[in-house]
Image (cartoon, rainbow, N blue to C red; front, top):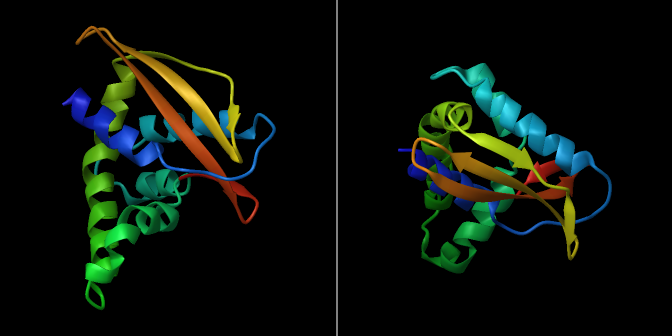
Length: 147
């Protein structure tokens, strides 16, 4: 179960990004994890708070771009809606117990080209495994978002 959450978070958080500088992505990463810890199952308000950290449009465009020509009319939009719903219903509620049952630290934000990446080193004592999550941030309309 925890490995599933780690996999979903890794996929979600390991895309490309733009712009650099400051500790803002570092702070946004901490706020993102705090928002995940506050998620309540089937609670739209807590889901929307987490949604605000993620640029689903960028992620979806990047993910389906190689196959975009294979989608018919509204299929790409339907695919996006369904994937977001899947992430919200499975990953958000499970992330809360995942982070509560782990020990973690955040590493300094690092520019990666035009991107800012923040590493979260996680130890899961129950499974005795270490997991590294890279949160990749890009600035959209003045706000840092995960891409």
